[in-house]
Length: 296
Length: 300
Image (cartoon, rainbow over all chains, first blue to last red; front, side, top):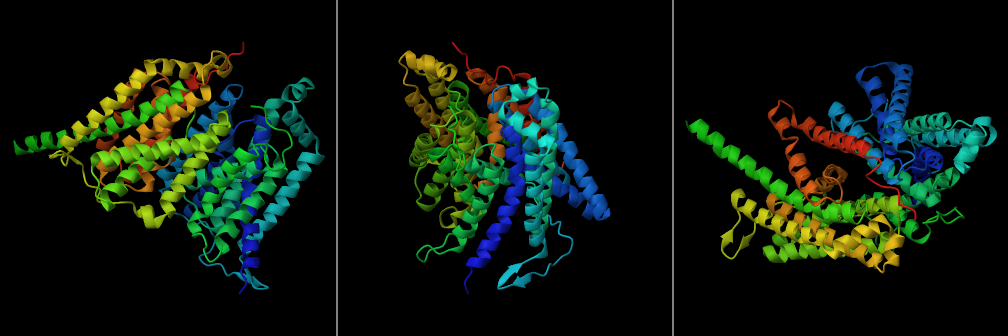
């Protein structure tokens, strides 16, 4: 049996998750010019909020979604206010260090409350997969691909066709010039950061339903989002989306295809993101789709 | 009476345990201080060098039955080699890019440690690492091992203190403050940075070697990112670049969460709690020192 079509579909699924997770990171990098290490931890917050509301409290779907949105917004807002804004105008490494501590704080808080064990947030115990032309796919995976297409189209419309999107692009291009024509930097940044947090938390919920959640998932997704963003060019949202799909493709093809009779063990799948980061930083630091070389 | 004696004997064991931990972290933190504090290189792969040192000692002493000196020197060499490799890759990057590059590099190392099962046994770890024996003196008991660890820590501190004060250390500080000015003064900044990287990593390898000997058992979870956060916290609290500040903060921060041990806290909560305490301390100190910690480069 040829497994290539199945691998391509799997690549599409993981690429969709990475795209949802990393587009927010890229959007905030474009505005704030900081590397938010706690980005992947927002995924964890979203997923654990659903776990808490749906499985521990039994609040039903509507209540769970409302709780998850509320919790993510609160965490995102506090993070921005406490861990990012005081350090914005200082050395670029400072926010990196503070978000590193933020990630550790969130991770240990979740581990203290829910325990370090793997939790599942899928609604039912077993999900039947559907077979389409020899390819197996579960309903939740269809939801993942659909969400990626829908939400990313919405994001594209928002950024490129609305007044708020024009403000965002203006601020990303030149903050001081944009502020001088009375575009409020602080308000726009807060709005974008909260939207990005919601998007990320939603992708965390999808990850939780597709596989499972655990407190350590945050940093690994952060590094994957960094990889996708570096691949696509820092702050370049559509480059990052393309980078996410490339990352998904590389990961799935690398472990599925035999290299002259030798195939990589599945455990190395995650290491590809890191190798991509190093390779791109070395040979093409502006990203695959960037044209301008970053000075210094 | 016997209960009292038992308390003192067991209490003594506990203090010896803390002493050994302090010795290991003194080496680890002070070497990180050389690259982070003095040279201003934000190397997040320091714990990866520590891990490689630990694994080198573990493998050589269990599978090949090598002695103490072979193991420690091999550990230092392996970690130094890692630094040479990483330096060639990452020292071309600047600031935040360097941080991400080293983070990715340490993630590659931990992926290797977990997945290269034929060598490292993956998440199961390597058990049964024997305590060292030098010239008929054995270090099986913790009390004896403390002597060895203290000797190693003292030697490291003396060497690093000399380096901090030597012209090498001053040149390193200068290039950290302004690369352009130091280049104009004829300081080979690239070479100095590479060298500081290699020295720091080889001492991290030594710390890893002692850690493996002391614990008798190592697995990849001992070298996760929160260990890096801990070392970073020690150096930031002790003020980066300050030799005795970091010595003091090592004692302080290793001992700080110990009172928690005597409270009625289940161990599943204790681990995350320690991480959270360190992260909160790190954030508080960074917040207070935010204008001084990473100074914006002076422009002339």
